[in-house]
Image (tube, rainbow, N blue to C red; front, side, top):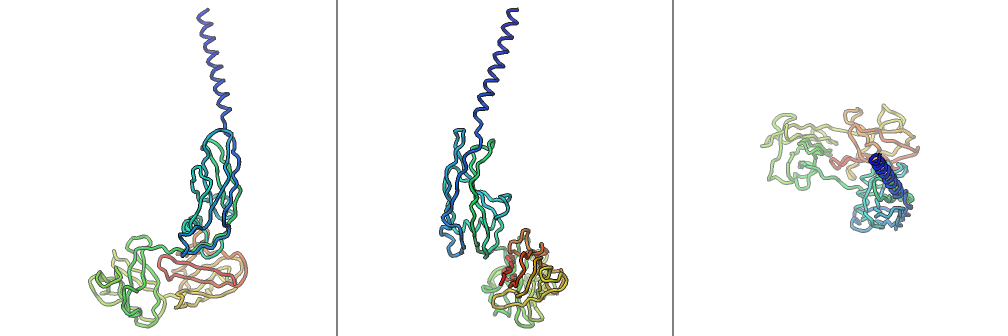
Length: 345
C-alpha cells in the first residue's frame, strides 16, 4: 500500500507540474503589437531616367512593441491602390526604422507591381512589424503615393538589318531580336522606297556572318542574294538562324473593339516615320480594344492582365474605363519592347 501511495503521489505531482508549465507558457503569448506609423518625405513622384541615382523618397516609421519582450523586425509592403496588398511586393528591413529609395530602385518596384509607365499611378505603402511567424503581425497606416515611372528598355539577343534604306551601315542598322533567346528573331522595319534590299547580320559590322538568300524564305549564311521588299511600307521581319528561314510581311495597323464602337471593323491608324509609331485620335466609349494588322487577327496585339502599357501578341483586350477623345499610340519600333498608350485629350 505504501508503495502504491508513493507512486500515486509522484504521478499527481507530475500532473501538477505539467499544468503549471502549461499555465506559464500561456503567459508568454505576445499578442498584437502596437501599430507603427509610416510617413514619406515625398508622396508625389515623377521619376526620370536621368535622375536614376538620386534619392526619390525616404520612408520613416515609428517603432512597434509587443507584450512579449523580443526583437521586432519590419517589412515594407508596396502595391497598386485597390489591391488591399494582395499582390504586394515586400522588402525585409530587419529592425530599422527608415528606408530610402533611389529613383532607379523605386522605378524597378513600380515595374514589379505592374504600374503603368509615363502616367500617374496610385500606390499604397505600409509597414508590417513582426516578432515571429507564430504571432500575428502589426500593420501601420496605409500611406498613399502617386508615382509616374519611366520606361526601361529590355535588351535581347539581336540581329542587325543593314540595307539600301539606310546606306548599308550595319553599325547604325535597326535590329530584330529573340525574346526567348531561341534563335528565332523578329522586329518591325520601315522601308520608304520600293525594291529595298537588305542583309541580316549577326553583328553590327561586315566582319561576321551576314545572311543572304538563295531561294525565297531561306537564309544563306555564306552569301547568296540580298533579301528584298518589293514595295515601300512597314514590315514584320522574322528570321530563324537555326532553321535558316525567314519571312517578311507588309503591315498596316488599325484599332477595333467595343470601345471604338465596332468589334469587326478597324479604325485605320497612320504611321509617323519621324516618331516611328502608329497613331490615331478617336472618340472612345467604355469598353475594350485591341490592335491588329491588315484587317485580320493573324497579327493581333492586346495587353497583359492587368493592362500595363505593354503589348502582347494575341493578348487580352485593353480596357477603356471612361468615354472621351483619346490619342491612341501603337509602338512596335523597339523590338521586344512593344508598347501602347491611350491618352485622353
